Image 1: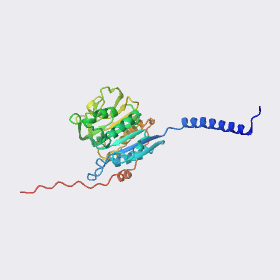
Image 2: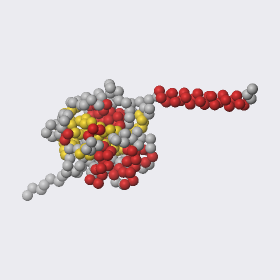
Image 3: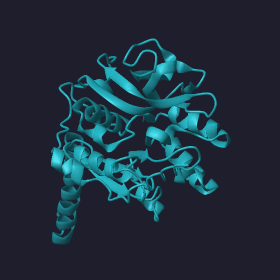
Image 4: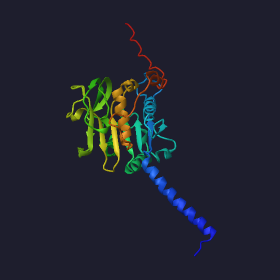
Length: 299
């Protein structure tokens, strides 16, 4: 039986579509998967010391570091929460660098809390930096669910002290992390979930023993959390000042932590994280200086 010309043409088109579809699947399997990371900077105070709690500048620095890794897309959000929440739709990880104690914009409305929970349920990575881990009592349950541990008022500790970090446990987040010394603003005494098997402490710092030392639970200031929902979270309570980004060990820890939560494979020889010092300084948000306290009048 002979096929008509138009039937032969349809058959040829169908075969082409099938072949092209298979080829596309093969190409997709061979191509490293893209990862989209949303950086959410909390509101940066207009009156303050340069670099202090400069969440916007910190997110700019993180973007510059992340873009050095192929296959990473970055979306910047300022003022604590996006005006259009659709920016979260394709996110593989969301980073919050913001004030805490209930000032986190993602806690100010019930629908925002619910939205973040939906994203967590989907397995989206969550990163919280510095005071973002400070949860008010009304949201401690959500905080532990998202991060594995939170700072609690009158339970946890905080302060500024010198700290030396030389020992790091074996984990993808610590690949290539080199030692550093710093005087930072720390939050420690973190209250963790009862089941600690999913938590990996990464950095320790305390007033009595100012440095990295495994086993001191009260001094944990950075940790990874493999959530029961399948997602990954990373928290770091330092980075009080923008100048901390100048430390290679600090930068690499933060970069690795974000990439890990996004499901990006971190090479054992470490992902690139170079940045020019002048460029880093230029990222800082212009501030009005704090008014100097008035001198006491002599009697």
